[in-house]
Image (cartoon, rainbow, N blue to C red; front, side, top):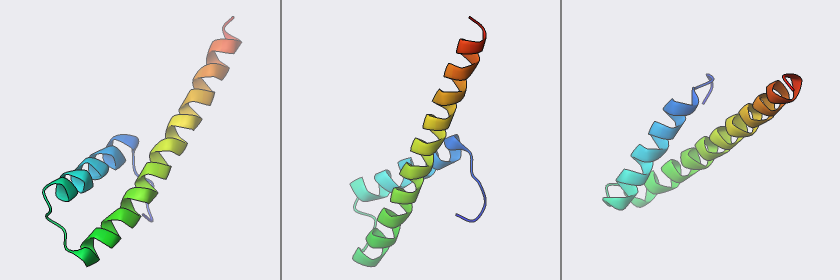
Length: 64
């Protein structure tokens, strides 16, 4: 993930990985690769949500 991707794109990629796993479309080698990618995507999404939450709280605090 060299380039910065948007939250929605990361979420879509995660949904694709989950779908492939649920439909047993991955062999063992692909599963390992996809799980590593999913882990990176989950972290990216979590980080973006945390950052956005902090920004929203700051904005709301400033407007009181």
